[in-house]
Image (cartoon, rainbow, N blue to C red; front, side, top):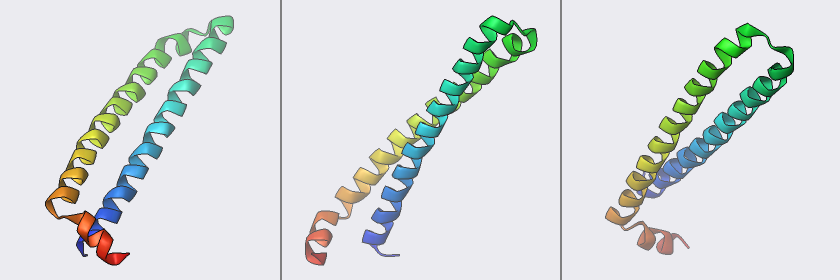
Length: 92
């Protein structure tokens, strides 16, 4: 795999991280909606378990966000260290 291919793969992974963050955010919204609906129902099982579920998903979202940021830094360093700008200019 050449340097440009590696960079393309890194960019693809960054897009996947973004998609993962969006999915996790959607799950958090759904859990919050269930919690709100349960206010009227008052089901103890949901009152007990949903906050834990929300916290676990939120913790995972924080991990994904942190990893994405670290990987973005790794990708940017790779771009600089390997003079990718010059390779892109040659390719065009």
